[in-house]
Each structure stands twice: as structure tokens, then as C-alpha cells.
Image (cartoon, rainbow, N blue to C red; front, side, top):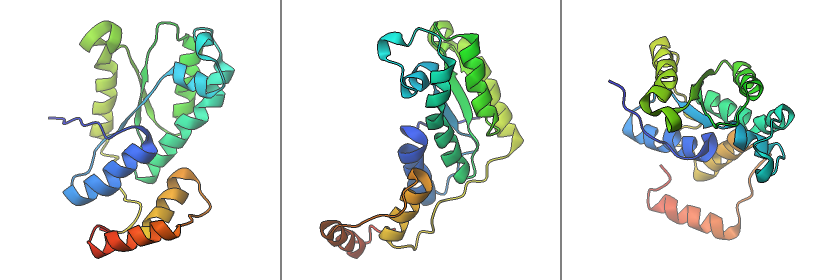
Length: 189
């Protein structure tokens, strides 16, 4: 049996909370992760205006793909290489889809074209096969970003630097007071 859950938006905020908080305290670990992407979103992140998304533009997709690459890299920091589900839109071109597949291949990520919006369950079979292959590979070995006994500031710094690329964090006086209060209440773990 396979249990599927949605962890939240993005492989920074959503995945980090799911892995570092929910998985830490439940003791459960995912055996596979699906990261959803669209050609349209990556083109928009590459500078294409919404009204122009139907026009093929591989260069814009490649510019916007840095966002997807970061999410893949973030998941790999947790020991997970995702299956990338490309939610297909009717105006996606084969050239754009191939460019997106190439981005994923750089990181060893499996890719599946998801057409369930148009084809129902049959349109999700490729994704199901790729997830099953990922599960069968036994490749997942979840690594949490920090130990439970670190201070809140150490945990914040690790997340900010590791997932968001920050140089460091700055804790305001008000935030420091709230962190001290949370720590007194035992919420730092």
C-alpha cells in the first residue's frame, strides 16, 4: 500500500515543516517525494507575462527553472530526490517539456508528465509508475536539517542558510523575547 499526503507549498517552507517538524515528532519518514511543476509557472518566473504564456519560449522556461532547481536541491539536502510531476497544459510544447526534463535530469530526478486534468486516472498512470519506481529503488534516506536539542536561533539560522541561501539571521529584541518565552514553555523542541 502507498499512503499519499500533501506536505504544503514548496520544498522550502512546506517540505521543511513536514520533514523537520512532522516527521521528527511522528517518527515517520517519506519513501518518495513528488514535486509538482508547470511549464507555465516556470515561464512566468522566467519573465513571461501571463497573457503570453501560450507562446512557446524555451529560454524563459530555462530562466525560470532556477526556481525548480532550488526546490530539487532543497529536497536533496533532506536526502530525497523528488519525482517531478509536470502538470501538463494544452499549449505546452514538446520542446518546452524536453527542456524541463533536461533540468530535472541534471539532478537525477525522475520526471512524469501528468495529464490527469484531461484524462482522469489514465493521465496519472505515468506519475504513479515513476513514484512506484522511486519507492522500489529504496533510495530515500531522510536527513533532518538540525538536531532537536539545538536552540531556536540555531535552527532558524540553519533553515535560513541551507534552504534560503541567507548569509545569517538577525533576531530583533522582540523576537528574542518571544523565543525566550517559547523556550520556557518547552516549544523549542
